[in-house]
Length: 145
Image (cartoon, rainbow, N blue to C red; front, side, top):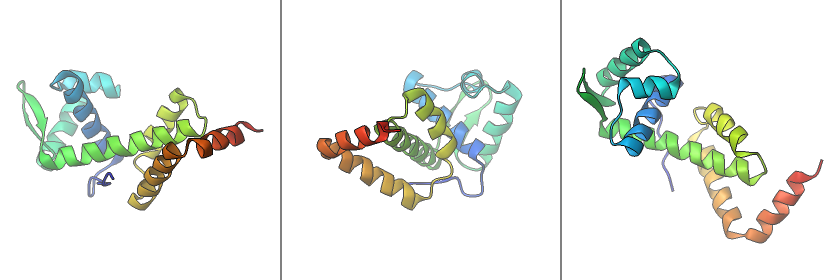
């Protein structure tokens, strides 16, 4: 079961940056400020400012023009955000929300979930995955208008 961790005293935006850096490193083996700017649709100066902020908070190590790496603390938060996002995506698609909408909604909700709610959704999706009969009935019920 995933553990929910939030950036203490930080913003949703900080979590978005940590998640973006984590995903870029997973996809490409590295993350540049340009990659982050493109992923988050923000300007390079905003990325530079946030990267410095996160480095000062101990979430990543960064050397200008040499790249960045999440610290253990930063990776723990990033993995938690990714986990919350995936749990929400799975749940929303289970109840019939299309993938594109589920992605947008998960992005908006993931920062606001209490750890207890995250664990409950995780258990519910696991239970529904185990009981395909129940899942089928739920999907049929959700199609009703």
